[in-house]
Length: 211
Image (cartoon, rainbow, N blue to C red; front, side, top):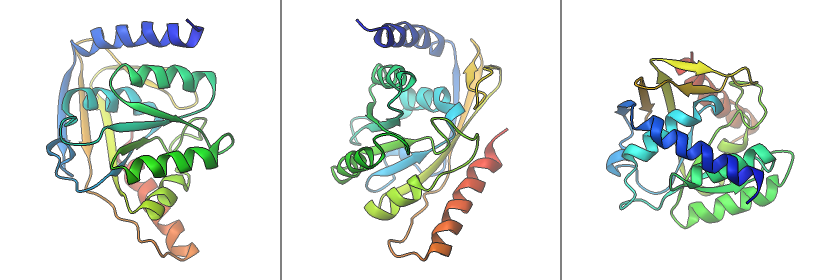
């Protein structure tokens, strides 16, 4: 067993125990938990909220009604750990970033979406800057026609790591509040100005919810 697999196994075991103590408050405005979102979607949230969104998926994602969630993770060793970690909670993963395997990862994501699967994307990952949204999620929505679901998690009590994103770990017996906003649809034909405006709008939507 590799070091990354071992760390992911230990981490997932700890997280599953932690999640047993945590309360979830879900404001599901788009209705994905009820399978009210037609077709595949891109669930978009900031990198430091991964554990909060993972917990909400673990509790409320309608696995029997939808085609599952695939997470885009970096091709680095940290990305391997995250890939194994989300796998322990029933999510798939595609490895890639803007600097490594970017085009190949995009093709894999397009294939998954066209097969009906949902995608989870942290648009400021894997290295930041924090709360800065790259063009990838807009391009993917434009290419595939998948809707974008902005999601946010807040924590009643938590520990913030001293990493570039201030990664958030919920404390035992705390509450995680997760909000999914209304779907956003990106037209296939956009001018450069319209594309940039769509990117800015999504970035602002996610920033307005962040603390």
